[in-house]
Image (cartoon, rainbow, N blue to C red; front, side):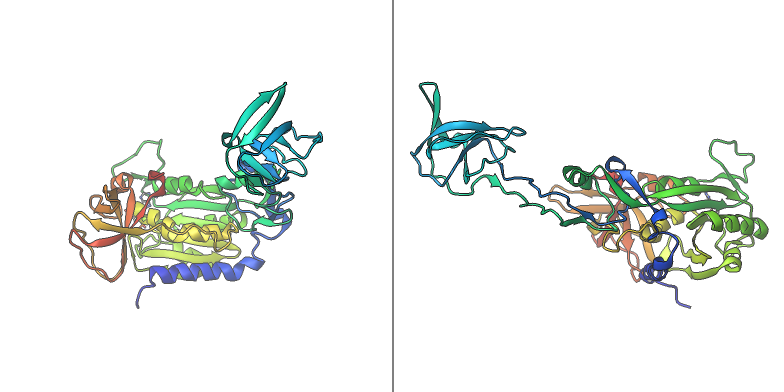
Length: 422
Ligand code: AMP
Ligand code: MG
């Protein structure tokens, strides 16, 4: 049977979740939203449209330091300075003649009746009998250097939509509208477990050369922190069906999602699939990707299940390629909001080994040449257990399913690790 392609699996996951979302226990209900301060809101998903309570700017204000005039005026015309309008201190007085202007600062309210602002650099300032006058060095057009009320945002406009993944710039926007808190979806609860009798926790001794440290669960728990997720650490589960069933059953009661590492191949002690089948359904098993061919996607009651293979790089890649967007979707992110991978073209500076038949996600080092073009080289051997290479890499090479080996000089697609770039 042909393997599912990467794209097919991505679509399948997206559709299954989409079908389930409206009646899902995750969102929509008021108990699944919370109000948080805007300072805490970056990376959370908005549960409500944000409607501007204000016009921005809130009044007609000056864009520059200068002088506000009641009308367009010609170079050489002379105006008496009849008052001052500073930011936070609007001019409240009145002018006595038609030939008066108001000294005005950036951000200060343009006094009623004033129709243009002349930059201070464009006038000559004179003092006569304790009075100040300006003489224009240039013609002044009407409406110059004024930011009009509501020009940027009108009161009542939707400025951010439900499903928005809030960004740093949104805090600026929300604060400038006077909003100090927002309603967001609650964090989803994701339980993480690893399987493998060989595994020991970092920080404890390795009691035998047949033991290894559990790297996957720690990697997953760390990486899930960048989403609005409450991680439930289910630790390590013994390699027997009964133990796996017991842990999954309890996870179904507390978690929205379960992610497991290991035990999804066809080895003698790979019980995960059997356990999920008994508790729910499996939608998918094998995908044409390297590393990480076994990728189990299923459901146990209301809880979604993702089973990653045990090899660390398979799990790492699986999280990037399949899990992140699924998790964002489950967090309530709008479909247009879900971050898409940044990919671009680079030229290989070294050959690449590759067999046709699966999409290969290799670990690579990319560098930018002076002319702006990018070069890429695989970062050491590409076996799925190698943890040093991925730590040294700064990008994935995305090699399509049909591709064979590639010589240096060939064009390839790369996807940078965003944390290594600014
Ligand atoms: P499995 O998918 O359980 O067959 O495991 C495949 C390989 O990955 C085996 O060599 C395991 O020892 C290793 N492995 C499984 N789980 C982990 C883990 N959590 N951390 C590091 N290596 C693992
Ligand atoms: Mg195992």
